[in-house]
Image (cartoon, rainbow over all chains, first blue to last red; front, side):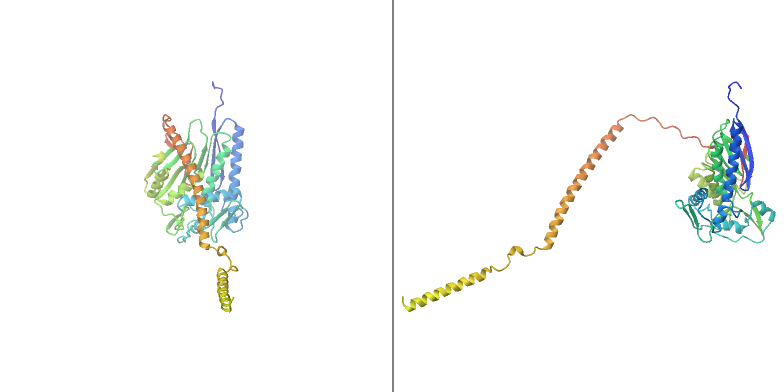
Length: 301
Length: 112
């Protein structure tokens, strides 16, 4: 301890929220600051879950989907606006209006309850997305076209992660991982945040120095419908679980929100188109194909 | 004076009076002067248009002259800059925020 500077250790806090496990890593010298930051992050995730959960009938999103929405909170306005922007930028491959398609596919309750229910008979009925959504920031309202309902699960999680690192960053360099959606703020003593990304051959470690990382895949949230396997990544064009040759996509982006919708966009696009999009937009990605091939793009090549 | 002379004088005076009346009638002093006839409206319109065009041409000339002066000043400035030595090369682009590393991971990004 010749330098006199207090040692910096990475403290970890873990808690459940938004249907997944949240891990918070903070490198700080002050234990109290770490505890306060972790508590604030926990509170923020729970607060946002009350807004964005489609499984809670009392959430702001559920009330909006039921046509009982009043003035929208700033968080709901922000996330819906981001989702609509993502819909445009992804060419429609990411679309927040896939709610009914998700429900028709069988994801009509929490995933734990879907697993407990078991296989569903028959194939899913297609429910193409693309419904009208109007955001009026001045009036503070979100209006949905008739028959349109929103699912903001993934993008809301990314939003929560971005807000969490902004909060925890006050205590020191930090990383927040919400079920695979990761964002970092500041650099630890190691100079980067090492994150494992699963590949068919095992895993590779990605060093993150800023921004975010998100993984979307069809290998986890899946269930059986008749003779067909259904999963939670809906192709907005068909209104059915995406028929993609990709098993999993990991994307690096400046924010967790963008990483989240990019991952969905690329997964829906399929391997060849995803590689082309990654090349065009200079994205760093890990594309894992169903046949076991792995494609690396951008700075990960 | 004989009666014939008187008659002759009367005839001459009558003819002269006749001519006089004719002259007066021909002059038509009760009629309106020719200048009071209404001018052709098309000519008045043409004259107004010509005056307007001349005024606009004068304004356009002023604008062109001002812009020409500004252009000449910009050319002079650009020439002065071109004569200066080349600036230092720009710094290299910032490193990518992500790369593959050989280190023990602290966490993992898995399918959500």
